[in-house]
Image 1 (tube, rainbow, N blue to C red):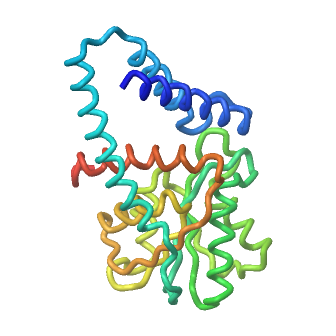
Image 2 (image 1 turned 45 degrees about the vertical axis):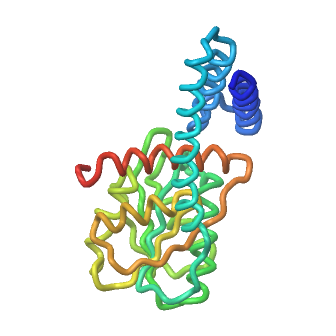
Length: 241
């Protein structure tokens, strides 16, 4: 077990350094987890545990990996694109905008939506996202501008510019249509599509098409681990949110 903790600790720290070098930011999304995880694992690997304590740690680690694997299998099962069929409307979930500039994750979502909208010209699109810290305009406005610049008719676009979370994306967007009876396409990055669908169903959406966009491969592991904790927290809270 000591070697396990030391190896995982070193790999976690190295992955943190990769994220920092790639993003050129010390605090990119969830990256700090890897530094903390690395420190904890290295500490456990060097700590003078007795043999009985190491056995307890071993079983705890095995249990944690089983839970992690089960949740990740569910996440991966939702990442597979569904057979295309027409939705009455798409909801593109917002992501960070830097000033007025579309970020990589958001661009991937918009490009996935563009491909779908070209196939189904009657489908409307709701761009959903408010204005957060460091954003000069609401995410919805930045998304609308991008789609229009790519040739989408402005009359097909509905702006929902108040939401600050995935739950609010769905809660505030449903006022524009019948969420229970119409077919709604959800557009977000592949790692996020599972949790997004779970939240949408809690918000009353019944007929859903998943439209997963790609993700930055460097950050993919980071995002998948973050989603594990987010889904676990949501399941533990149940319907109290």
